[in-house]
Image 1 (cartoon, helix red, strand yellow):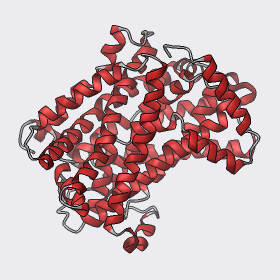
Image 2 (image 1 turned 45 degrees about the horizontal axis):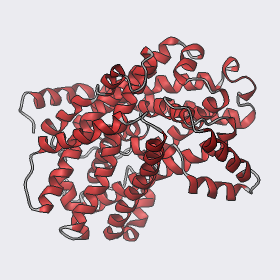
Image 3 (image 1 turned 60 degrees about the vertical axis):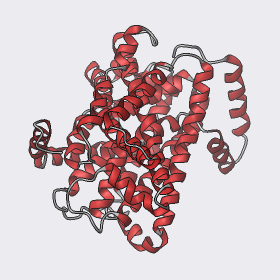
Image 4 (image 1 turned 90 degrees about the vertical axis):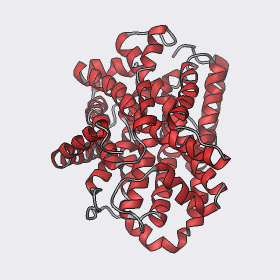
Length: 459
């Protein structure tokens, strides 16, 4: 959004699209998969500490029974993202302004404020897990490092990386490539660990886990709490804000609509489903038998799961897989916060005011000091806070999808349009239902636990 797209590169991109459009459907999909796109940026954002915490807790507490949660959350979110891409690429209108004019100021400001709030709240979980992972890697290397120091090390990496956004086209191209390789490297690392678990020996239980149901609670861990954590971390409101701007920043237009939809599937939906499924399977196969109904320390999880590949390389592979998730998410949280504030207050990207806005999530580094365990009673309140405004954003995109004033002749029609709109409505209803259930049944007890944490009576 700072530098106009390179005309020569954009012309080559359009020529490539025109050539691909002449191929059969399957050949087009293969071409889109090889090329990649901004969908990988969304994978890098959503595959973070919240996702890791939800998956490890899900597998440890309930085995394979909640394998259905993460795929459901991501598929419903992916349907909304396809609508976002269709709307943005059909009109070319800046998304915040489109939301303000055609869905209403309340929806638009709630969407932007929710983006900043979610980026700040979820930052704590990222630093809590990232510092623990680095402590474990240091232990493998033979020395002891304090968690607060590891948190500062991550911060020192994240701030200049986040500030580099908008610095030029070369950086943008390099970052795109890095995200694509990081996402598939994460998939590969967890796949290796899953194979060592003996995935084939659990095939029947794994298949049954994809059938939606709510198991009985396990000690302090409530099933509906883990479900809402899984749904809320699949698609965050900050993802819905960042994504359409990445499309505009690339200079994409209506000719990119099929490509963008395919990229959502290959770059965001499939990697997320594969990674979360592998993490739940690994945790379920290795941690559920000895689970005590209490919280799990990430270092302990790394040691238990990593030991499958040997006392050294097992832990290293598992830790690096987590670290790849966390570093990218921490950086993109800062970018989302800065971008949302830039749109709300008309800040120039790269200006001192923009950089101050990008630093709003930085207090999350305190997560490396206070929260040493993956605790469901910590994950759920943050999921509620971060996810409470997501239904508002979904409602806004539903309004845009049906707005003739906004989309004109590009407004979807016919049976497919009705099915598309119904799926967006189902996604909104599912999220609202589980949020309401969790707030009504669980929230008071969780706030009491958090109060104990700050009083120093909970580890």
